[in-house]
Image 1 (cartoon, rainbow, N blue to C red):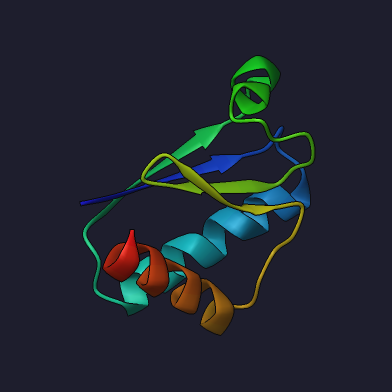
Image 2: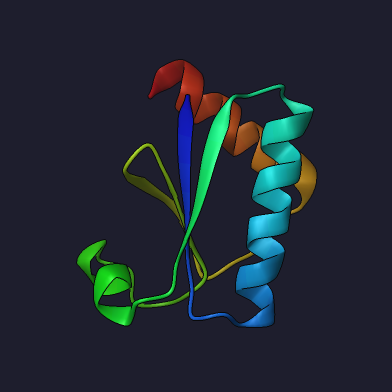
Length: 83
């Protein structure tokens, strides 16, 4: 089970990142749990100062950008296989 957290206050980029993360996980056939974190204090507790942020299995993998689907799949595969 992969745990993905989207850090963001609800901006369009945050929503897009969530859609891309979900699509990538489904394309890879991953069993995943997706959580949106919009509380600014929680976001800062990850050391993220710029949103959107992507956290996979507790590790911040992306900050301040929304990748394309293929890039997101690559990021998830690397994290899952090399963690």
